[in-house]
Length: 118
Image (cartoon, rainbow, N blue to C red; front, side, top):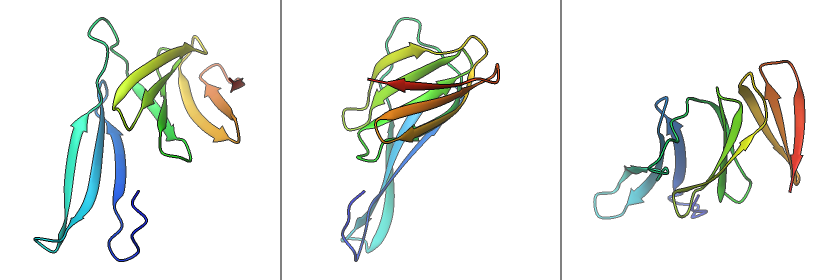
């Protein structure tokens, strides 16, 4: 997010089941209005088809942590718009993700909450 007080910009990340998109809402001084520009995050070409259930962006806006119905937390680098890793957490899906200090708390479909660090 651009901290320009007069015309701040915003980042929006959303999914449509199997894809993740990143959009930027930025003020265009030429037209004197906000414009939305977006693209999809690059996924590996082999076999990373996931249904995303929840997500959270870290405080710096660098990483997106997305839970999946397959029980993984997928990590995406937002500035480079690429997939980084898939961490298996549960066999019953990940339905909540919370970032707190240097840990990630993950709520899964089996009723457990796991704390991830590192």
